[in-house]
Amino acid sequence: MKRALVTGGAGFVGSNLCRRLLELGYRVICLDNLSTGQMRNIKELSGNRNFCFLQRDVCEPFKAEVDEIYNAACPASPSAYQAEPVRTTRTCVLGAINMLELATATGALMMQFSTSEVYGEPSVHPQSESYRGCVNPIGPRSCYDEGKRCAESLCFDYHRQFGTRIKVIRIFNTYGPGMAPEDGRVVSNFIMQALRGEPLTVYGDGSQTRSFQYIDDLIDGILKVMAGRDDFLGPVNLGNPEEFTMSELAELVLRETGSSSGLVKLPSPPDDPTRRRADISLAASELAGWRPKVHLEEGIRRTIDYFKAFV
Ligand code: UDP
Image (cartoon, rainbow, N blue to C red; front, side):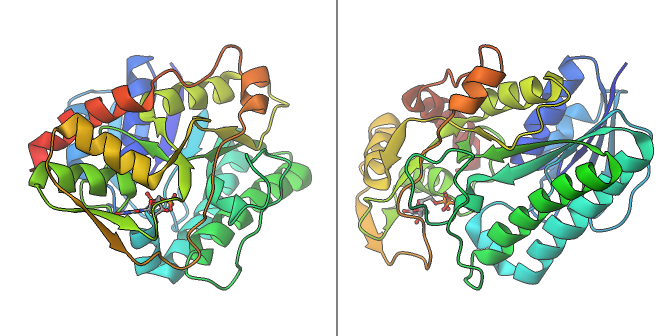
């Protein structure tokens, strides 16, 4: 029976991963300080005797005998990671160090959950892993962007210096059940606003783009990366390459909810990337058969059903 440690295991991605690992027969230790993670996400898992939840901060060293470490702990919504920026950097950097120390000591395989934010405001489109990014090192997003970049750097230095077994994934915008309805991200905001009959808040002119990946597709990719060749370290993009403007997303949400809400244009947040699309050629060639399967329309429908309980 494989033993996994999932940091940030009560969060959106972490809790979906914990559930899938349990289904696969793993024993799972879920670590979360509940700063943005939610107990409701892991409520149904707590009855499983292979599941153990520990309320702890990844910034504190942690010891356990595990085979795999999934380091997902960090607020990921811009409003959440910018609320306490110094804490965000600490979580990225100290969290990575603590998990890499654990991996080094135990021989566990450590997966770092990195992000498309490492590409910043990209001058290359779509973004492949060889693009080194264009990040403002002193802007309001830098706590997260630079924190995650430093975490990647630590992974590769631990690997080179100590032989630590690592994998690095770069996650593009992901959505689906388990997202916090008030987390401030665009999918949750638009759906909750549409369901409540409030205007949808489009930042800037709505022409900025993102590619949105449904959570199940991400979890499939994560498991394939973890099970892949030992010498495939990444970084590897995991995302859905279909690109949409925020105006198109707003229209889709209005259509699928049947809401009569209008749109309201609000100022664009500083350093908001204007274009982002995942180049997933590397994932497609390395992860036998992986590619996102859930189209945005279908995924948004499922997510609307999930959010209805919160209205
Ligand atoms: N956005 C928006 N309305 C909202 C929330 C976000 O138009 O209520 C825009 C935001 O400016 C950005 C995109 O949606 O261009 C994605 O934002 P999100 O916070 O979901 O994630 P990001 O990719 O910026 O980390």
